[in-house]
Image: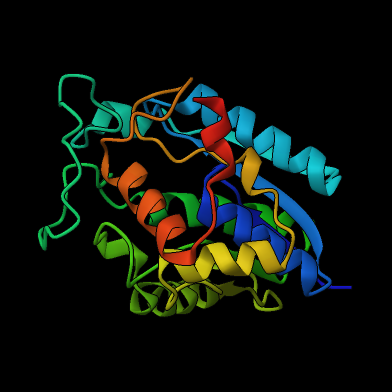
Length: 222
């Protein structure tokens, strides 16, 4: 059985990505990255709950505090206000954490070499995301070439992005079909008890559930 590392933030997309890898029969290893985001405590709880749901024994949580020191994002700098949702915005939003996915995948590749994982799954989405440049498939294709150049000759690691061309409603429907624990996930950028409902992430989630015709299970928290 092939081993796969799943980057699990605790959010909706990463949860459905984990469900996809589980359904494909991979031996799962879960990786969580804390980078000083506003909701890191709540996201870590969501991650732990998803770990328990899938009974994953190989787990790693890594602190990337340098992204706080670098700053440049409203997710890591409390002096920058989280803006209200604007899903029609075509510019890269201030919630973008500069080159975050490259930092995260680098950690995953290092761990993959140690534990012998052949695949790394990440829940990146191109079409229905906030327009982050490091969520494009071209980025992951380029990174796969970097992995080949920077790892042992016998190492072979594929970056899997099973949700890359789906919109949020399709992701939700996929999660429901795979019996993913969507009720354990957390998406809000700024609140840790009840979702704010105002940020881009909350708006994307709400629109996705509405379009899918499914009630968001975390609304029971309100």
